[in-house]
Image 1 (spheres, one colour):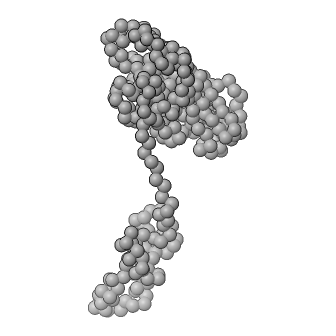
Image 2 (cartoon, rainbow, N blue to C red; image 1 turned 45 degrees about the vertical axis):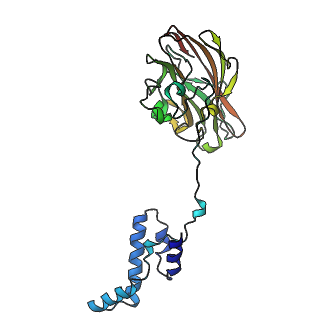
Image 3 (cartoon, one colour; image 1 turned 180 degrees about the vertical axis):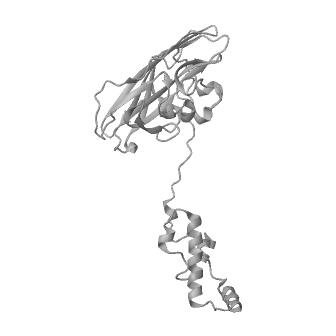
Length: 309
């Protein structure tokens, strides 16, 4: 900061590039044009016509700062925004359905989830609205390709290729032999002219049955804020993905998330786990929701039930 202050003090009137030039977004062009203007101004008043005089004039003016060596005074460094890096939420004993970023394998996704052929896209029953106060509708995609050209890797790039889910580009159940789960894409629709920043995603999960080796888990029967427990930021990408509807997607502007809940298991695992989810897109004064469920049974290390509905 001290060096910048010294240079700014030495700046002579007329040495900066034209304000219109500084307004251009291509910095390289701005620098080049700014330097050319300085030379033109010097040529007009002091540069002699003979070569010897030109060299002397250049030497005399060499102590003056060149415009592209300085940061334009119009830049306001007080406007820089610093976004803190969130620390992943503390895990609460096998109770997280949305994966925690950077967690060990046995902790990233820990619930048994749906399997078998998944149902198709389902919208919420609430009537559609063209108001920017609430979403038009809310949907789930449990089979077939994800909309918007997205995959599970788009939503969870930190889990890419690490064996936490299978067939990342499509919805439905998977069983890798050591981890059983399902992919689901969840998306809400708002009218295209509306500002997406006025809408937020929510998801709750209720553990209707949760037993490991016959022992009732402390979270059975309880409901949780699933996104908050994951520690992920649901306000921006990669967790939240947006795209313009049309084609296979409903008309409007799409705000989406995805969930790959799953559980690791071994040759001696015995797990019973049923979960009910509600995923919601909330607007300034209204909301649209969709419900979905996962039911899993693992007996003696073999998956006997894995259903997503």
